[in-house]
Length: 116
Image (tube, rainbow, N blue to C red; front, side):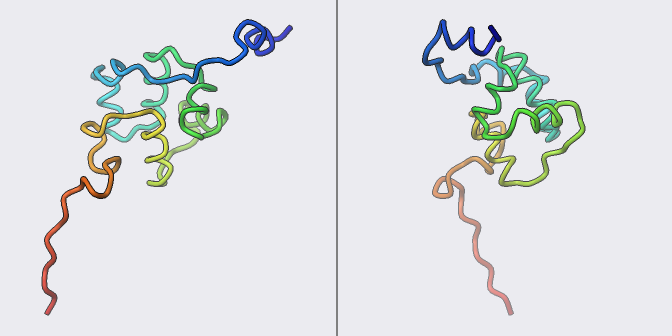
């Protein structure tokens, strides 16, 4: 019996995976996020959170194969919408991500300037 079938026999409704909050306190995770190295970030979050790539795919909506290529450096994540989906799915703290994950009503409004 394959491992997936074996897991489904022992746990009919597996709990939804989540990223443990303490993952975000590691300096290497913070550094990867600050450097916008999303491949390294995914690898570190996965390893520190004891998650599988399949768990990360479930959380983020990105395919397991894309996450594998991202972690190995074969692909890059540059689309801001997909970056937001990734960080939101990983439940990245807004104080580490900056304003991109803050709801629009929480972000401070910029003053309007008259154009002449």
